[in-house]
Image: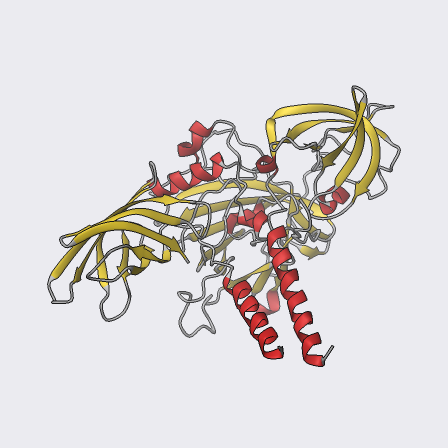
Length: 133
Length: 375
């Protein structure tokens, strides 16, 4: 009973502490994004993006780590808040895979804003959905 | 109940309080975000209660509407600002007959922004001065006080007494030479003027328009009590006080609006002194500032800002590349001239500047604490 109570309290506290997202009032795409690109057989369904803005270009990487992909071309059109991201990765056989992501930025005013749309590569396509952390 | 169980309940209560507190953070707001400035209502009624609390004072009145008697809430400024105008918690009492004309709440609830339009119905006189923040009668021009080194003294303790700077002539950043109309919170009278305000990059203009379209209700200074970093600290009616620590070559800038926040300007010193890695991993709300004298002008150069706040009323965006060069002069005893040069290649297409003045007011800068305790 006591152990269960303590566990519940820890989970509740962790939830509360995790809830505040680091504010971002600068470029809307800057930050870490976590979500899915569904049915991606080469990279898996889960995606992490780390995006930055240097004043001229949106830069960043997808899935930081040994299999990371560098973002080569990314744009944000404030008319409709359309997001376009291109990145180059490799499939499990070591072949080159070029990704094109197109989506729409939603909830611009929130630190937990999201981008939803589609991804496309030589080997497939699917739904794309990430949220800023 | 065992000791462990007691501890758990204590912890759970604390967590619940935290959750309630975070929810209530939406309570403080930009005026235009809550009230529709284009839709005013006229009310006449009898005061039933005065709720003298932060973030805004509320006066409740019973208003006869047909056969019904409806209770309305008249929202006013914070107690701190009202006290600056001579208002006290006993200025209005239950039973007083008052009238108000002001903008109604956007959500249709029986709330009205009182501003400076609350009057006693028997005399027709305003409850508090029509101009909330009078700069006072024009005083005879007096020379600016000077310190032992010959430079002007900006305050707060001077041979002539303690004072601070308030009543800014502009309350939102607009590029020098540009004429656009906006209210005191930086909301544009004409949204089509957005692109004129400053030389913004397309994304920055999009963000600015979005904030304006939402009536500034996402302002983190109100929503989350974020500090008024950058030029915003000189746009507050609550003022700013200079405290010069000449012995240690630094100037403290005490904010009337920033929860006892203060900014330090290091005179003639490396602003990154003491930091091994410089500013990159430690961006700040007020940045890192170094100051120097150019004749009678105090020049403050600041970098190292974070992106967690709005650096001006009205919602112009900035990035961590923001570099400010501020010039303070005191042309006479009662006037502070402030000029800021904004250099932020992350958000703007070129350097630009804005200029305004503030007025000297005797006394200690009033302290305002951002609290979010009710809607």
